[in-house]
Image (cartoon, rainbow, N blue to C red; front, side, top):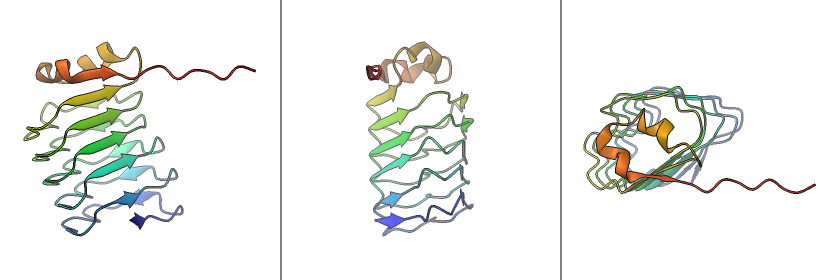
Length: 150
């Protein structure tokens, strides 16, 4: 497990590109930006959680991460850009948080194993407007979080 220090706010372009031994990474909830190609070619990476503090993710972010099976992007990311998950042939599940503004039509190119796209409760229609039609049947709404009684 690679732990990024809390003081780091941005993962730079190509920061971990082709780190074939990077199996897991802990991204702190102080992170705001993950740049283009940051994890491209990380063939040992199997899952990743991008915390809700991250509002910017670059294009080709996971390009060629051939063993990546699950991704959670929890924040109000502005855009899931061009070929974010290009050739992530093992990717089965993606979990989106609230407020992803735009998803490029080629964001999931080569994702032949994709089975489920989890979205927040009552947000299926929101995400259907942003995802290509071929992915609409994969959308599953997560249950609403219950508020604690006071």
